[in-house]
Amino acid sequence: MKAAAKAADRRPGRKMKKSWACFGGFAAGVINGLLGAAGGLAVVPALRKAGASVRQSHATSVAVILPVSILSAVLYLHGGRFSFSDALPYLPGGVLGAAFGAWLLPKLPADLLRRIFGGFMLWAAIRLLKP
Image (cartoon, rainbow, N blue to C red; front, side):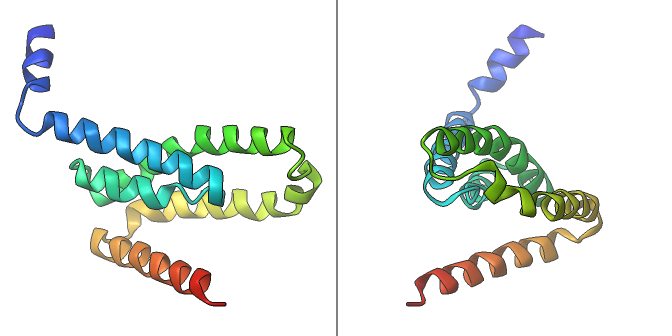
């Protein structure tokens, strides 16, 4: 079994996929630290480039962003950049929205999910670039 795993690691393209994972993780951390939880915008495309399905990319990005977001929040809190009471009003809606999104993810066609994600990225870009 170990020999098969080592052979799989030597397949062409495997190193490239690991490079995308490393780059995607780093980009997610930087974006998350600068912009706050927007790191998924970097993780999803990196996961897709590494060969993950659309649904798998979106679900996995949440698992990547959770610890990164927690670390960013702890550092921001420790640095006095916000107080927990600032975030508290948003938590109930955020938790309900996350549960709804996780329930909805497997029900959406992959192409629609990809389009929603792309549309959200465009909306965010336009909104941020407006003076």
